[in-house]
Amino acid sequence: MATATSIKLDDELKGRVQHLADARQRSSHWIMREAIKQYVDREEKREASRQDALRAWQEYQSTGLHLTLEEADAWLAKLEAGEDAEPPACHS
Image (cartoon, rainbow, N blue to C red; front, side, top):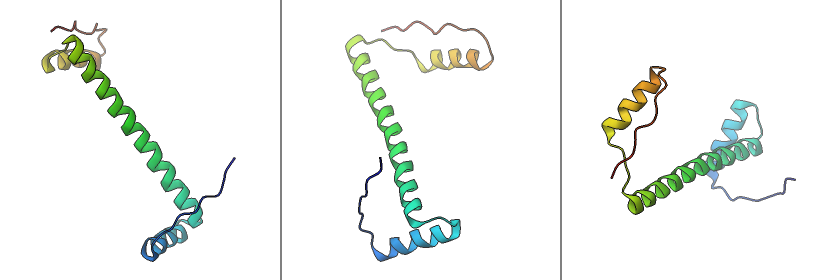
């Protein structure tokens, strides 16, 4: 269910949105809704990535387990070449 939300835009931005809406043969409402949707989608992905990185850092701090850049690159090169490669063992 959609509910109405108001947003205040300065005249310049409102004009830019309207200009784009006219050029795309869309309503300014559609342009704003699409812009907000794309922003939220992008920021949710960015936040998920940030949370993954924080979890990985916390795990490293508690275990000390890691791969070197060379080990990770070699494993990824094998995967890219289509080889069935087991991930290298982590070490501390």
